[in-house]
Length: 228
Image 1 (tube, rainbow, N blue to C red):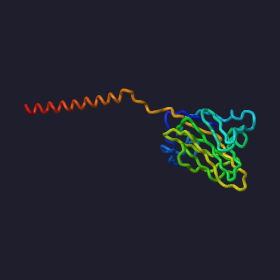
Image 2: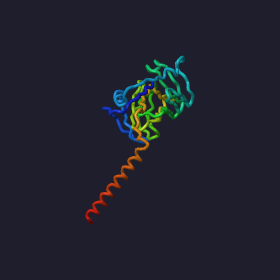
Image 3: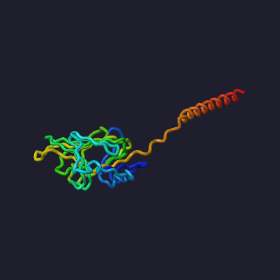
Image 4: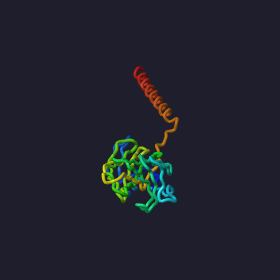
């Protein structure tokens, strides 16, 4: 499920987990859907149902990629879309690898959003090392994925164009790794700085010149009066 949000501005949420030093401005992290929604505002929903309309799952390649609602979702390994009621109550994307040691990643590329949140999960056993990278910045550790799904959200005053989830670790008793994207929430920037009229800077410069000339004229008149 993808939820796209259109807002006039971002509010301050009551529950914040951390401030992340990403590429650009600081990023605020939210650990609950409630706090994220308070910051992000009203929502519009797009879901993954259309990606697997008939079969239990649809295969998108290894590595895999699929576009939906203007966003692109890609994985470093095999990518599947599953119907609801298969492990989760919602349809979801799943990146899966048989590599040993396992390495798994899911990337979300957007046209530029103010905020993004998602529920991630693993319907087997989660790998111990899970990180998120925003706009190519420094990777930040997340709580390992769970079979029931874990929510995390981020807001940024700059536009977020990419999110990369990476899962690594060592599980000798397990053959491969699974990383699921159960839903995604986004805010689209709808308010930008109001541009100045094209002639305003020149007009302001002209006012400054007139003021300077006026001050010079006053000084000359004062000097002439003193000499008389």
